[in-house]
Length: 336
View 1 (cartoon, rainbow, N blue to C red):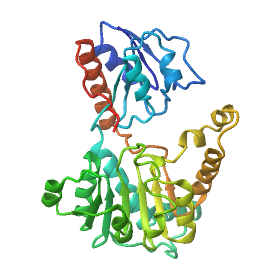
View 2: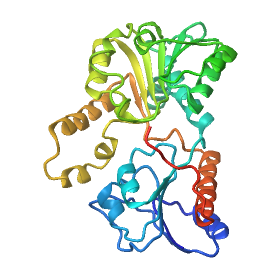
View 3: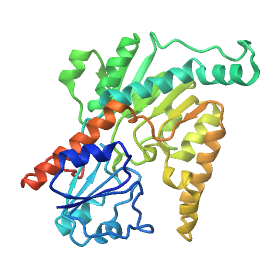
C-alpha cells in the first residue's frame, strides 16, 4: 500500500520503515490544510497529527484514500461525515497518554497555585529573593472538580486524591462503580462550578461540549477558583474566560489549548482565509489578551509530549495500519 505520513518527526521514520517494510512510504513534516495540500496525493492511507485539518476538501484531494489515521486521541479535525459517505475508515489512538496529560494538568495547577512561574521569572530577571506577591495556597483539603471521567479524568482523580483533595466530578455518563471505589461523587455541572476550588477539564470536543463553560454559567464559579484545560480550547468560551479572569471570578487559568489556537499561532494562515468570521477574529484577539495576563499560563498544546507517550502513539498507529491491511478496522473514530 501507499502510505503518507504527515507532521512527522525524524526519529519516527526508522520505526515506520522497520514495521512496514513492504509498503511504499512517504514522509513529510508538513501539515495538511485545504489551502496547503501536498503535491503527492495517490495514497491509500494518510496519517496526520492534530494540526492538520482533514475536512471534505482535504480528504477529497486523495482519490485512492481508504483510511485516514490521526496520531492523537482527539479527532475533531477529521470530517467523519465525509468519511462515512466515501467509505474511508477514520482511526485514532485511544489511551496513549492518560497519565501523561493528567500529570501535566497538575503541573499547570501547581505552577498557578504556588506562583512558581512568577518566582522563577523574578529570580532569573532580577536576582531578587523577595517573596512579596508570591504567597500561594495548599491543594490539600481543597475540592477538585473534574469535568469528564474517562481514561484521563480517572487518572486526574487519583492524583487529586494523592494531594489530599476532595473530588467531585461531572460526566454525562457517570461511572458510579469507579466513583465508589475511588471515593468521589458525581454532581451536576452547575454544582461542580459552584463548589470547586480548582476545575480540570477532560472531555472530548463535540457539539455537546462546545462552550460547555460559557458566559451563562461561568458566573456560578465561586471567586478565586483555578481553571485547567488540557482538553480542547472550544470547550471554554474565550470571551467568558477573559471576563472571569478580569473580574476575579477565576484566580488563574492553566491552558494547554486555546479556542482557534491554529489561527492564533499562525496568523498568516488566518489572513489567507480572506474574510474571517467576526467571532473568530475576536477570539484570536482575546487569545493574545490571555497570553499577556499574569495569572494565566498558556502552553503550546504540549500535554501529550513525552518520549513514552509519543512512542505509544506511533506504535499504536502502526498496529492499526497493519490490522487494516489484514482486513480488520480497530480504533475506529466514531461520532460521539
